[in-house]
Structure formats: C-alpha cells, structure tokens
Length: 203
Image 1 (cartoon, one colour):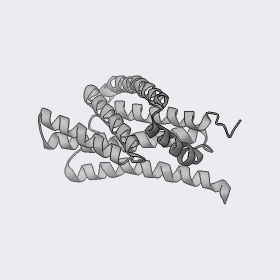
Image 2: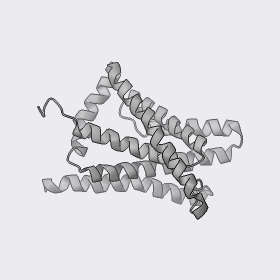
Image 3: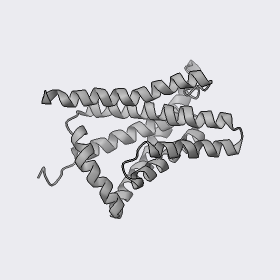
C-alpha cells in the first residue's frame, strides 16, 4: 500500500491542476470568453508561439532570482514558510521522479494560467473596456491567485506578486503561452531544487 501512495499523489495532483484549466475553458465557453484566444492554432502563428515561449523561458530568470533573494533575507515570516515547505510539501514531492515533477509543473502552469490569466484577467478586461479594466483585471486575478496559494499571509502576498508578474507578462507578449511557460518552468526548477537539495537529516 505504501509504495502506491506517491503514484496516487502524482495522479491526483496532476488531475487537480489540469482540471483547473479544463474547468476554465468550460466556464469561458459559457460566458463567451476564450481563455486560449491568444494561442491560435494556425501555421502562420508558429513564430509567434516560439517568441512567446522564449519570453516565458527568459521571464523565469527574475523569478528564480527573487526566490533566492527572499530566502536569503532571513526574515521570520520567510523562515515560517520554509519550515512549512520542508515539513509538509517536500515529503510529498521528494519520492517523485524528474518526469513526474515536470508533469505536475506543466499541469500547474497550464491549469492556473488558463484560469487566472486566460479566463479571469481576459474576462474582466473585456467586461470593463479601457485602461481601467486592464489594471483591474491584473489586480483581481493576482489577488485571487495569491489567496488560492494561502499557506501563510506572507506566502499569499508573494504569490500575488508572482500573479501580477505573470499578468504583466501576458499583457506585454499578448500571448498566454509566455506566462504559462514561465509558471511551469519556475515550478519545475523550484520543485527539483527543493526535493533534490541535501538536508541536515540526509547528511
């Protein structure tokens, strides 16, 4: 029974994250918002998708620097997050293979970006036309993104900042592919680092 627990968690985590995107597509169809409108399926859009993908890869670098900076600040609030991650999160992901970590990271990038940027941010911007609607769409999507990542107030605030970063990336590139790639790649690198780094208990 114990040997099947990691596999069960992988399937559950992948399904939950991916279902966010599928659910957002269904809701978008009902309310007349296409979350994937910025990623057209056409031969002449391949170059656009490649550029958006490169934007996503490049946008991962500031996120990683931000992660390193926050961890080195040594603030009590950050220490609480690290203790929670080390005691609750890492044990769940540590038994997973690189492929499994990559699959969950991709599902998270897809599901969460389709929901928060593709559906919410796009939908609010369409509902309230003009610059005010754009600002409101980024703020609302980012705050909800942070709230849905509530581990501690500090973690939620950092997640909201990351959500705003993804939202701005979406606006700049005009392609959901860019924040999707950045989100998935950042999650993957962070998970690999957290689960593969040595700890005092391992030495």
